[in-house]
Length: 304
Image 1: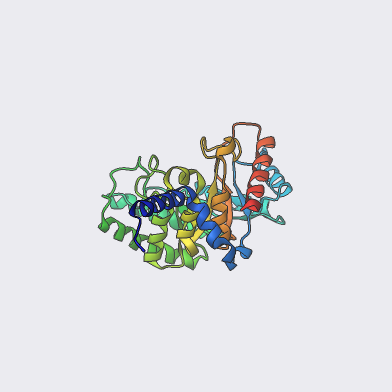
Image 2 (image 1 turned 90 degrees about the horizontal axis):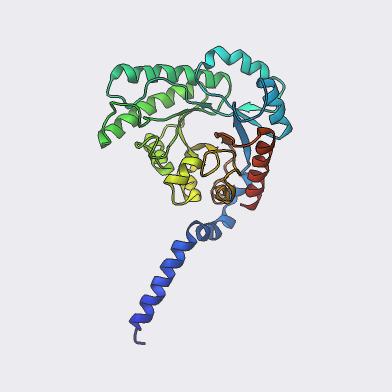
């Protein structure tokens, strides 16, 4: 049978366009139902300290327990001075420390060895604290755009980064926790921007103490597909941040833009059962917008 070249090209182009439009949705429908891990997935919601309304930790934790929030993500700055406060406030509650968010000094990709040493030393303090609080890890960014002078973006720099994180990961494992690489959008940190980049570093290091995370806010600007980004991380995905997708406010405050279903599908496919933690501001009254955000996320998790 003679090949109709015009029909062939027309069909091929149409199929390519459909794939481009379908994107992640097509991928999910083809694979999601067959993934046995999805039954293990669970939406464990965590709050950073500023999310819940309340004059003190106990009031905030009361609000969180009332609304089924099971994780607390403290900032690392000054955490040693607050350990007892955290332990007392958490005693007898159904809330656990999810991870410690940064708080280190210096940065690991500095060209100044003293600044790198400061980063390593303060990260060790944070990892020890994470172990005491039974947190799943400590979040770190290799270098923010404002931190200069910085090492060049070369293979040698990446090799150096892997070496440093391998050592930090081993230290973290000694304290039953991990170090978690966080990709940010290019306006905040050009060096590490996509979840797959962070995951590839984790794979190359091959140390159970080195993990990565995804942040829906940063992913809005850097990822073509939330689901694919999470799936690219696989077993290395240790934590997730969430915020509204235009103003980094409470989920739902940016209207229809605040859709996390695609990403949740990926998390379900991989059996993700760690934390999805709020890292965001709020435009409205927190007593109103925070419960609304929780309702939105739970509804979209079910839709996924």
